Length: 143
Image 1 (cartoon, one colour):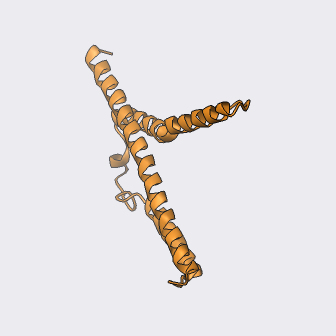
Image 2 (spheres, rainbow, N blue to C red):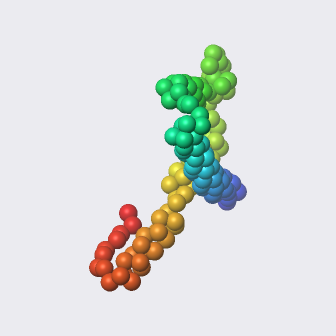
Image 3 (cartoon, rainbow, N blue to C red):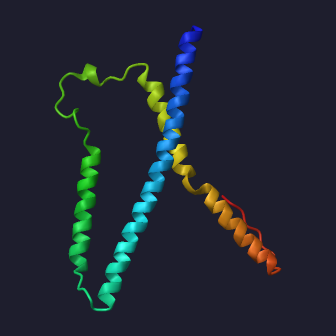
C-alpha cells in the first residue's frame, strides 16, 4: 500500500465519518422539531374539541394516520431503480464505496445518538443543584 492510497482511504473514511455525524445529528433535530409541531397540532385539535369549537372524528384521523404510516413505510422499503433491474453488475459497490458507506453509517449512528446528550446532562446537573440547595441527599447518574 502506497502513501497515496493510504491518504485517499484516510480522507474517504474521515470525511464520510464526519459527514455522517452531521447528517445524523441534523436528522435527529429535524425529527424532534416535527414531533413537537405534530404534538402541538394534536393538542390544538383536542383544545378546540374540548371547547366545542370544532368536532373531530378521531377514528377517521387515526385511520388516515395509519394509512400515511403504511404508505411511508412502503416508500422507504422500495429502492427505486433496483426493481426489475436485470444487470446486477451495476448494483455491486466498488471497493471505494464500501469504506465510504461503512464510515458514513458509523458517523450517522453516532450523530443520531449524540443529539441530546449535553442537554440531558445539563438538566440532571440543574436538578442535582436544586436538590442540594434544599439539603436533600441524592445521587444521580447519567446513563
